[in-house]
Length: 499
Image (tube, rainbow, N blue to C red; front, side, top):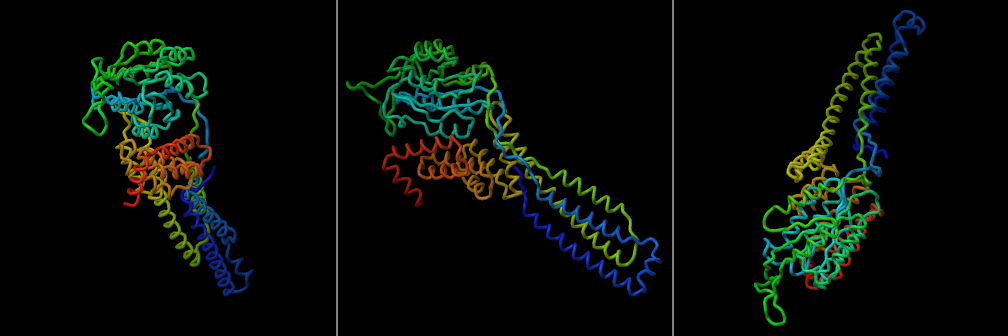
């Protein structure tokens, strides 16, 4: 696909017509003055060095050179096509227990929040991997289909709570079975299911499900959260703890034996999660051990700058125009003054053009910082600075604003990210990027439980790219969440909208 990054400069082509008119006027004036000297044939015979062709040739060379300079300023680009490339990575499905027992506080701040911190760190370390989220209690459902969109993964992770599933319990078998069906159809890819639980399996069948996964070449790793001594389960919003039918405080204990059995059956490993950071190190080690296989992934190629060729041709034509000589006279001297002015204009245009490239350079630096990791974390804050510099150079650069929003999301600054996404949606023209912008806006709003607004964003995303399956899934999920949202919460959202 071909486009101009700065098409407004193409209006300067109109100047070529103005220059052509001025050139004709100078030429006609020169002919009139030659007639004043006498007979045309006699005058020409006296002008031995006179050439009628050279001035016209020099003018054409100057005009064409100026045309190529203007095209270079408009920054012709090729790209933005969907291409499938191979990359190495794994497919990981994370099955997170969201039963009420995960609210126990024997692991700080509680079992569920500790698990979410582990998952977030795991996602931060991913590069060419794909990840999916499954939440389960008495039943299981997919929270996020397998994807390489790590921004969406972290946003959906932040919304997970025990309220998501009404049927309580701990059906690990259902989570593993659903995980087996959640991978892509790509062959020769290392796959793993990471089950995070406190080990209270009320349904049974988890070991058999893990064995079935192992037969399909899927590794099952189990992360046991909690303590074997147990802890009471707090009731959200109160200072009380859950009690049984006899009035005794319910104690939730980690069943390490069952966790180890599931991991062994699934050809994986068991990781004990406590208040220390040892579990994070073990998790990273096991992930690294998984064979890195080649996966196919759809990527959108960036626009490649093509202005260099036009600039080179323009410079060569300009040099050729200077080399070609013509006889000096007072009319030509005036024309040379005009040419010097034109050269000055070209110099100014080149300076402007050079400054127009700086925004791209800042974006590339920011992208490198977002890809590179230091101690397992992307350098989002440093990338944010580079994107800000790109916006200072070109406030209408939608790519810079979109990437800035992504860097803010990585820093958990959702409100600031939304402002950048909104600005990007106003200035970006490419439909694929617009779809991604609206998709991320929907993710942010969905995480904030503003489901009605999120649905509208997903609609905008699908209008720009109907083939976006991740957006379509989020759209359907958001509709279901809106339907299940309590009425008082809907009223609260409406009041927030009015404020």
